[in-house]
Amino acid sequence: MITLVVADDQATVREALAVMLDLAPDVSVVATATNGAEAVEAAARHQPDVLLMDLNMPVMGGVEATGRIHALGPATTVLVLTTFDDDSSILAALQAGASGYLTKEADRETILQAVRAAAQGQTVLSPEVQRRLLALASRTVPQPDSAAFGLTGREREVLGLIGDGLRNPEIASRLVISEATVKTHINNLFAKAGFHSRADAVRYALRRRSGSG
Image (cartoon, rainbow, N blue to C red; front, side, top):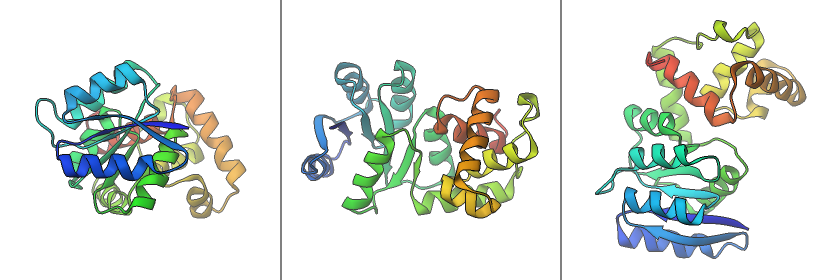
């Protein structure tokens, strides 16, 4: 059973999401929050598998709340669900520790599948967000500077594609290699770079491209 907290300052949206997702046989909504501060408190109290986070909330915004929840430890994965899909919002949320980013145009099934994927430690990016990240990558450095980690050329390619939001089957197709080979490259680069999750790799690639790391 996936435990979930829903954080959104709009009562109708918050309640609709909570009811809709709680109907899934493998999801249990354990709490809701009306602002970022309540979201942090709920994460600390309930330690849910996933926290569905809006960004524009009073008292404490979603980005700051995401950073505080990320600092609490690996118990809770933050999945952003917001109306904003601009570059700055996406980068700020992912750099704060969010493991996924969806817009509120997503339908119930898309949100539910994203919650399930996030609970398994996967990075979840909506098609709109992936297009934004690809556009950002085309305007900036095409590959993160990972020489300090001693990565091979292929491992740097894989890391760059992870930063673009691609999943293992898409990376395998892009590089014309098997998924097993992709997993081997990911395991190697994670060990060299000290990444603990795919989200760590995404955030690193985005920081390099935005010039902030």
